[in-house]
Image (cartoon, rainbow, N blue to C red; front, side, top):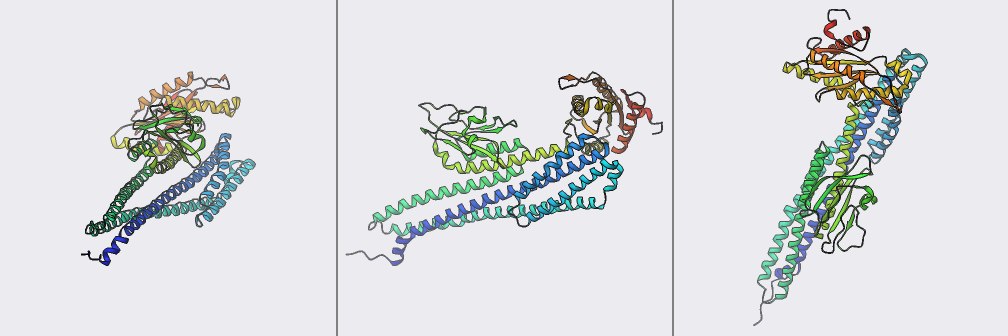
Length: 572
């Protein structure tokens, strides 16, 4: 008795069911790979947009520096301001060229940047014309040259910069939404495709059970196919988890505000991404001569030096990852210990590069080569870390440039005005005093004429260091302008401020500055002291009171401390 023929739907299921399941999982894999590529592209675009915004801010900051230096030169005639103006003006073309390069693929922003560059060049021409009038007719002539065109140019530059930043922020928001769409697409593929594939496999398996005796060979083939599909599912699930982790890691990197935060976050991420693998993160020192360890996780199969010259690593030499597999004949990096006969692990050095600049190095090692299968994810995470470190370094440089005066290292006048208002409000809320000093180096103009501007700069720098030495952690030392300095002493009453001023005056008498191998002559300082709320309840009145006391000290022979209390009953 012959067995009945198989039903048509079972025959078709046997022939095409597994093929359909394989096609579904291939489609899932392709979808996840495409989604991952789209996500990485969106992340790169977000980094690019942040870089454009940072570059716009750098151009604006440089233009403000040039305008501030020009005004300082017009008001004081100090050549150092003119030199600062020239340096700031000369940096603008390079920054604008970099900005144009960044937006050259944006048909909307590229013409705006060119228009903005024209406005900035026009503003520079106006500043040059003002300087020319100043040289011909002094400050009055320069003031007459500042007309409505100058104000219009400044307003146009600011307005166009706001438009550029607004457009980039719109792009940033759109690209963030695109990244979110990519994540949802990956979740949809995982949630819909995998159950569908599993359901199809189960259906095919149920049909095959009834034909075990007649088709034993087909059952074996089906079992093997199922194992392969389960392996693919596990791989896809792991890739999906890795991509989600990479997405979260990239988002948190963008939210870091300090370099040490980004380094700690990266160490935790790499430890989860590559379990059982030892890792070390290096940063290249500012001198660009050594790489120094800043983070470590796991246990290395081969130890690496905590600090080494850049030429000791092939990855830093070539600017691309360098792998050394077990029993490989490729030369290993010299900063890594040599393997023994019993221990032949694999190592990987991945350089951290952003905008063509080497930021550091990621070193990985393990006795098991399996971690090399996930090296592409490690390289992507390293690229994100490089961009984050580059952005944080740029933000830190811009922040320091905006509040610090480069010659003395003290805070600038703008920071003084902001800090004085803040500290006055805080002390007023708590019912605490606040004192303020105005300091002026005696006969500085004569000193500058005798020893030149370079000698004068050396004196100002030395005095700035002395003022920082005699300041508490909470004090705020600023260069007010020229040879005038200001020291804010929160929570200090008038007597304590006068005692501190006397100590500073005595320290200046004994201060000795060496310049070009020679010791410069000794100088003295005159100091005016005022205190809140005795001599003023706002920053301007307190500065005026301290300034009057300073002029009193100047008139009465210099090299002395005068408090505002001594001149309260006298006319200004």
